[in-house]
Length: 255
Image (cartoon, rainbow, N blue to C red; front, top):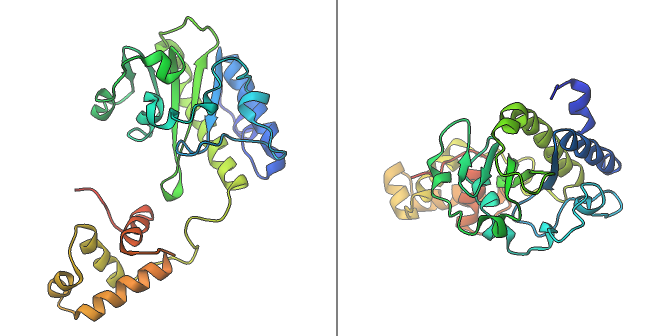
């Protein structure tokens, strides 16, 4: 598969009117590699990408018209090992009932249950591209063999996996940008050094009193900084303030 500026731009979306054209381009790219694409702009959302007129791309462009209409499965985000893996991996991988295959080892994937794989994944094998977006949103594109009996995708993955990654990220990221609703966070959400320091301690469970003692400031000052951070991040409580600060990379929730 030959990458070019023109081929990448063919799947890029600048406005809702571009969605159908970009989806058709992605469909052609997948088909030429013997695959059929299944795009999801948000693995936690029951909805699936649509064009400017609200037509479901999975059905009208990518040809998912048979019994495997995966977007109608309300539990697929929780049950499918494909979506589960997208929470722990950011690079393309392929998977079948025997396990996950990545270019770099990922022990989180080996812990995912693959019992009854075909029924839960709604495919016998797939190449999957996770698309990690701003504000913690995760999209994905699954490339499934046109041959329903195919279960070994190592050769296809080695030949096309990286290209699938670029096409998928371009398509999903630009789709979300063009079709997205209100931003999850306000654009002017820059936190001060003191606000970040308070939130870092709050993230590991420290109370306002404990933070005040650690920082050598009054409890009122700590509350003031956390309150200001919550206003900047449009958060409704302390927990959401910490979460949104982590989404923007101000603090880490890793332990």
